[in-house]
Length: 225
Ligand SMILES: [Cu+2]
Image 1 (cartoon, protein in one colour):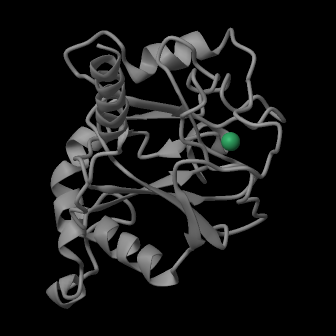
Image 2 (tube, protein in one colour):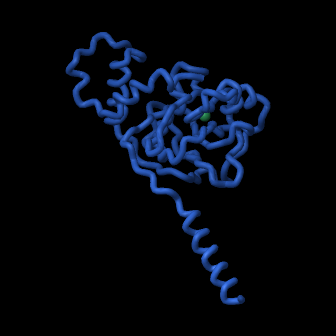
């Protein structure tokens, strides 16, 4: 019986390991670019778009505009606090810029369709309390809305995900390719949201990635609050 018990324990151990292995997520090739900061919205304390619908395997890519913004995953119930358990995704304060976009971006892959709540943990100017937060895959049948998150955030104290302000987790810091932003500008022209759709002829559409066309389709949903 001792041998059987040992075997069972060994089996449980190995199956446990198997179950704990991260699932393989196949890339869809779709990129959702989210800008931390804004030239017009909420005095710059804004993620744009702040409400994104993404599928498993999509890439989320944060671009950082002036000031020293970051992105920290949280729960809905505790705005401006890192996700409990220490496994949340965060970008660190690696993207300060005085003008234009920071030279690097922060990327991570969407691994499930659970709502992903996040905030900017910059305390100089209380970014999170001022409304600098967002969500990926909000449940639109729930009353857990981004508007409610922002409302609750007003009465919180921002917490950092790490004692080291430069530490990041759960994603990659990679160079910000200028072409990516040019594609974004063209896409804005296509949907006529930013800069207007006029003044662009059909030749401007050539070369836009399929992912950007797909983003255009998602545009309506991505801007819900
Ligand atoms: Cu910020």
